[in-house]
Length: 253
Ligand SMILES: [Zn+2]
Ligand SMILES: [Zn+2]
Image 1: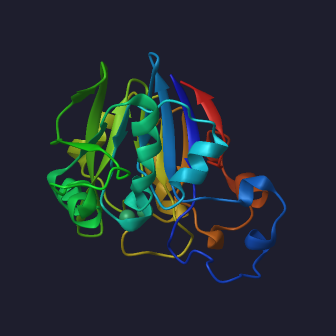
Image 2 (image 1 turned 60 degrees about the vertical axis):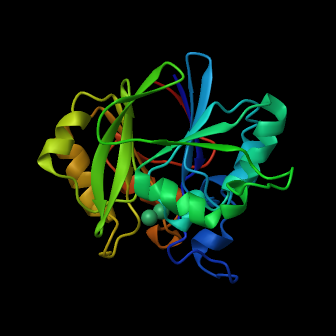
């Protein structure tokens, strides 16, 4: 399986208005972070987890030519806002795009993209197929995804395990029962927003403590705020088995 980080950034305090901090002014490409998303290529199939506001740019940048399904972690705007652009894959592939998510996520998608679900649709709208998932393993084009239910403040969010790879974003609490599903994973991606406490995201030190407790051989941090610091400086502080994710990073798992 090949994993490509499409985005490792956040909308949390995202510099929309020009910011003069060292990260926002950095020329290191690893400090340029689009909203969080990941691309999985497994057994000839191609999936993305979440379609945030930067989805189109991410598809072009990573040169994604085929997309078999989208799997959603949760319904926050930074994870769904770019969904309209899947229509390009509808035209290319001549079929509806399957979307997997909790019922609450699919309901939100139906509200936000109501025009894609009307009786008399404009021809150019995305063609979406909604597939509800619950907290049990499910099959997407022959590939098994195991949800890991985590809490993001008061909102339940799904992380996903696919084989030896586990992707968890947008959380500040994971129950012992759900952590059991992560054990034995070879590569773990974990939310770490910033250094200061936050109501719905892990801090850097909380993420490190959890990763160490799980004893995973390799972990990457994601959903990173510009307040975290320069990529190079933060990595120098981290133990060798924990790295910062960066946009464009590709792993064979
Ligand atoms: Zn969120
Ligand atoms: Zn988020």
